Length: 153
Image (tube, rainbow, N blue to C red; front, top):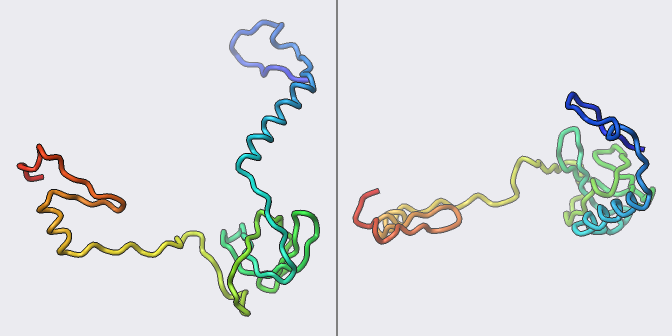
């Protein structure tokens, strides 16, 4: 049963009476939600016991290196990280290609990007670009329009 929430705005008494929602309507609604969710979801492969993994630790918001111990349920695993055993859902576990016997000493920090630092442009190229009316951002070169080439900007 459902009913409208009461508010200070005037509403007729008919609208405030509860009415039963048909189960067929709710079933269609849930099927539609599932269809849109399944568009972007993908199945995760099962982990092998002894495989090195990364576990997301919500306390310090880091991906810690650990080892899969065993599968407990279809999506649940027991993993060992830093000598402590955790039971985690598969969505919080990532496989890793690292081969490190000291797996408990390495930590990923989420705040540090994995991209290399951008190269600084050389001084000679910036002088040449300014004379040619070019300006460069990180991703593209911006050319000054022909009508503004006579002016100093």
